[in-house]
Amino acid sequence: MLPLKLTNRCFAGTTAAFFMVVNLAKLISFSMLGLFTRTTLLTSLVLTPVAVLGIWAGVRLNRCLNVTLFYKCSHVILLVIGTRLIYTSLKIIL
Image (cartoon, rainbow, N blue to C red; front, top):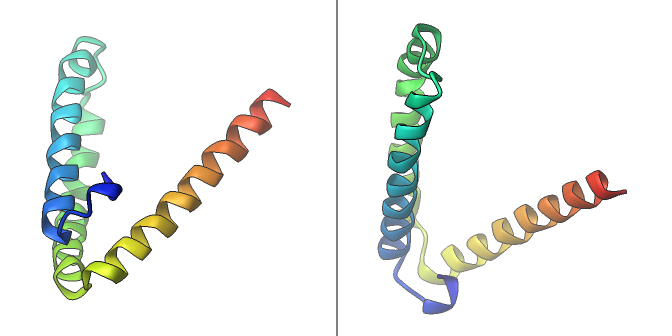
């Protein structure tokens, strides 16, 4: 999506919507596997304020960054994550 040069808000919103759909699809299989226990639900409840704080910080940061800086940060993050994935894959193979 980076080559589309969307606005900060449009890029973040599209990414958030995509991951929401993916995570909702995982709910069915996770519940069928019995992964929702009392412990996992309580842990999720305890961590909910942290998630809300992260969303708030992300929205504020998204509003503050200009488009050029936003895309530079996005490319750097993508490079770091891609490098880590390649390193991990090579570590497993070798």
